[in-house]
Length: 112
Image 1 (cartoon, rainbow, N blue to C red):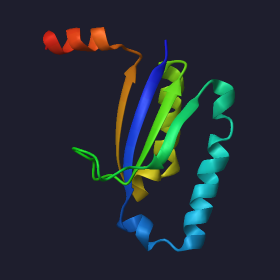
Image 2 (image 1 turned 90 degrees about the vertical axis):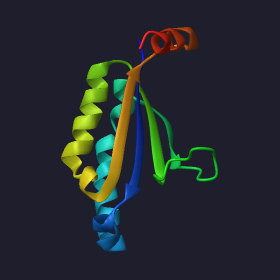
Image 3 (image 1 turned 90 degrees about the horizontal axis):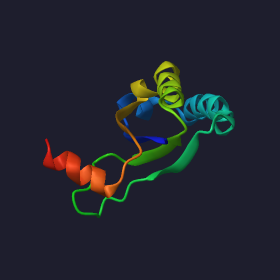
């Protein structure tokens, strides 16, 4: 069963205070750490800027959508994000779930 992670994030004042060189160095480390994820079955479905003009848009500037083969690989990515210092530079929220469908979701909402 697939597992998913959705990230929403915006640069904070600490990120804004970094020079372009410092940002590149930090992101280079992130990129190097992410290089082996596909061999673990981790898929990036989207890493992009958010679209502000939609109904009920988030104020976050960026989003990430990931698919994982299991909860353990998702937990490993989240641990890596935390240990990288990412959360110190970005206002960040995560949402995670396993695979589900419309019928199951409607039933869950009915029985809340």
